[in-house]
Picture: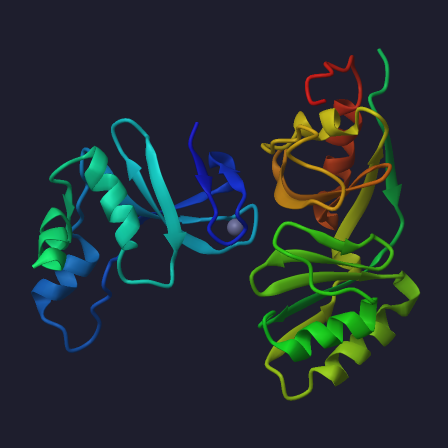
Length: 118
Length: 175
Ligand SMILES: [Zn+2]
């Protein structure tokens, strides 16, 4: 059973109170974009075996969308964060990397940390 | 078989949905003028079911007033918030309201809702929107038990599962 903490309500939400919203941080490419960009928006997904960034909605609660970092293999939850952002919080990335050295997810993760240190 | 709690269905309760920027001081003043209560923290109720405020989401409150005063309260809020971006609607007839009263009331709800209802986790003044068996619902704890609200369209279903859940032997597991 999956339990996620809603960053708005602060409550522990049971899986049955939530609605899954697929992959997080998708960039929506609209008119004027290239076919490759539009394809990436529609079809290209990470689908990792490991820590994944996802969208969830607190459907039986505040009704708000939020993000979660969750391992697709062990179901370990690393944290949740509000939807009003384009990237996971730095402390969450560090928490994931501490347990999963070398973790990368699109432009986030290991290389992101090296960039931050440089 | 014994009864864990007494289930009472209430005939009517005045309710106003208010959506607005809750950090706006004008909104807080309007809520206080209408109810006598400040905006509660997340997961809390201010006041009670007769005159109270429920925290529904970061931008939504459910205001409860006596049924026959709801129009006056709504007008008061709308007037106070003129010029402030908001939405306030009388939703008194949208929901069914129940009271689950008795020593083992929390066991009745724990059988139906995926909520930690241990006495040290959920107490008087706490409020939670959740799932009651198969339907959305919300409840808060007061001195004599819990008040439960759900959409009126599923009120009969909610009453049925609450009454069924109130039958049986208490486990005493929730403290
Ligand atoms: Zn929530």
